[in-house]
Length: 201
Length: 242
Image (tube, rainbow over all chains, first blue to last red; front, side):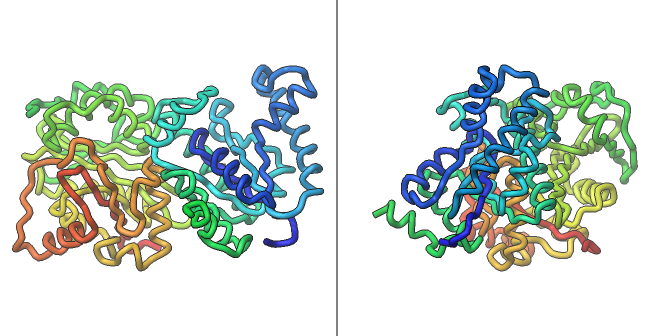
């Protein structure tokens, strides 16, 4: 493991399985830190405005995101090691071309992983999980995916960060293996696939 | 088997660019026109798709609509004012290579007319892609794509994906854009059960045809099961591209 702090942005459409994969990885590798942006943002909104984040209009949401971004950036400075940030760059409900994350966070992120699976699998996972406003229409899913990828392309270009694609079609331990292999490719961990082997016994 | 005709006037969309090819006309609908008129195209394209691939039932409207919403260009071929073929093109431009994903269908009576090649040539002229991507299970159709002269190299038939990390990455990008990421083996290009209806169309594979046989051999070795609805993603590198 590298000694300095490294931030890896983990993105993908809602319901692809990012949060489950990250939670599972961090349970197995406690030296890694996970930051779940949506949860943290919602908590921040309740704390600072006494109202749920999505009750606010879009302009207020942007202000909250900006304040939250500044606070989060500060709190990340004291951390070290490998930090996985579970987040989205876009929310098509606010416009497909809009990057919702504040610049102060994006400039801190070293590299990105984009998790994706087939439409069929994502829709199935959305149906199984909490819907939380997630769309079950394949056509909308394509719009979400395209928006996220276009934003990711822009951000990785702007901040000269790397992007690796992760197949999230399979079981959770397979997704973990893919993520571990990607982190090894970034030079952030040494062992490739060892994690999955441990899990498989 | 569905047997029906689609008069051009039934579409009610007039904003197109028309070109001629042999006795056919090819009408190209671009960007805004396509998006604004998606609903008008859906019934005709659903029927056309079923006619082209010999389905027992009309392709579900939602499936056709989904395909159209991903598309940046629609081409319709007409003969005597009847619509007899279509091609859709989705531009996948994420830096690096510019890819267009092509999906085509032509009614059986007008197949082997060179229309498929003409669609591709027009799309290359229009979008100037580096790579044209497609998905097929019919070696005869793949062979006609190869011999069209449009492409310099076709992955994985000329060069397997296993030999090029760059083209595996392009393939990954294409499958993401099509919503099939994770369903496609990036080493072979094979997607299992790509078509729920199984084998598409009635075509004969002539074992004595050298080109078709070579493709069929590759498909078999890569594990493609036609009756299971399997298909292969291929990438054609356009002549004179970067």
